Amino acid sequence: MSKTEHTLDLMGNWTYAPAPEDSKHIKLNKKYDLFIGGKFVKPGKGKYFDTFSPSTEEKLAEVAEAEEKDVDLAVKAARNAYEKVWKKMPAKERAKYIFRIARMIQERSRELAVIESMDGGKPIRESRDIDVPLAANHFFYYAGWADKLEYAFPGRNPTSLGVAGQIIPWNFPLLMAAWKIAPALATGNTVVLKPAETTPLTALKLAEIIQESGLPDGVVNIITGFGKTGAAIVNHPDVNKVAFTGSTDVGKLIQKSIAGTDKKITLELGGKAANIVFEDAPIDQAVEGIVNGIFFNQGHVCCAGSRLFVQEGIANELIRKLKDRMETLIVGNPLDKNTDVGAINSKEQLDKINHYIKLGVNEGADLFQSSCAIPKKGYFCKPTLFLHASQSHRIVQEEIFGPVLAVQTFRTIEEVIEKANNIPYGLSAGVWTDKGSKIFNMTGKLRAGVVWANTYNKFDPTSPFGGYKESGFGREGGLHGLMPYLKF
Ligand code: NAI
Ligand code: MG
Image (tube, rainbow, N blue to C red; front, side):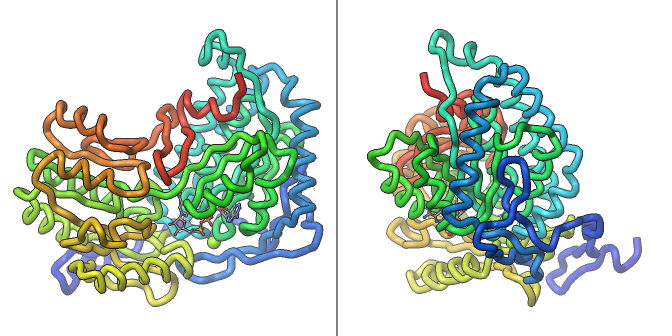
């Protein structure tokens, strides 16, 4: 093995030579138009905005900004496709299109993974092994349900709603598009989808795939823009169903603005998950789960395990092991296959995270950060731990959406349940213990939509996902994920 492949750094850790994923095969247009009625069309007012790579700060492409009129055209295209084609098509024919989209995502998986990492900053290992395969699997899974709805809901005669307006965030751009589009199509609805302004490119690639798949024109429309475009979708009178994933603030706005209409709605909002480790847990496995829960994907996960609760007897050992593991995390180029922690999605998000790190120090928690170097260009944040955090700290109560973990210790089950639930959010939680009975006891008492036991951040299309309290309502994924797109 040559020196350049494997060397010791100053900390005595092994470092790896760069192993970048090739991006030369990626073809991006200079400009992307709006995908409406099966065609790429220019925005009415001719306005475009830039999308950047957060790891290099380079401009990747210009993307159309949809105004109210463009939104109206997209909704009209979706309505037309719904009434004339999609609603009438036999379900097993609909399924074939959904299945074809899944296959095409698989065929173009490498390209999609590289673009996802370029545009959003997440490590290629993650976009390649998680985002893209899961996106394809969601289409496969819901293709299977399309002609079996009467068996999913026996005796209830489910029917489609019409046009679904779907707005998604920047943390899982392609996967969130799949979560939204696949069940809508399987249930016979048509779609107007808006990706987030910092990560529009894989959704636009998906538009190309959809065009190539031969899906009837207007069944899926993908339009780009900022919050204003999203609001225009939500408020369009001919939209029957709104599906939103993003911040709790915007979720509340959306809920207010559709009050008094008969639009159906699902909201998947923020989180502040408790990852709870008992004394009888397998400690090394738990450390890996904690790292996976908050540091991989830069903590840009609504269900990130951002609060750690450790039972007192193992606190010292676990924290020592966690710090050691943090020192080995590789932060940097998202396209490098060795990278564990990629770029923060935007300058704004990095500023927000740094603001919370300062706040945590001022609140009196003990700061520990990996000693790794971070690239000079781009938006990066070191994996960060706050020890001796307390329940009243803002770093414990508020969603940071970055690689920042607040640690508390506990003595009894009652105490940890009380603390874990005493928060405005309720999306997910993790429990680490050797005892099955303890897991069942905890899952019943934790107010969280998803509870992982001895693992973390595991996703599967067959499993429903969603929150309690300010984390939103409605479920996506699994059989449950069909319901918000149906009336009975
Ligand atoms: P955001 O909620 O503003 O953006 C999410 C999506 O909603 C984007 O497509 C955006 O264009 C759209 N949007 C914005 N304002 C809208 C409006 N009034 N009506 C309709 N659509 C609208 O989230 P942002 O600003 O990107 O991130 C802010 C914070 O939100 C993050 O720091 C994080 O804490 C949280 N967040 C949570 C996510 C989750 O999955 N739970 C995902 C992204 C952000
Ligand atoms: Mg970008």
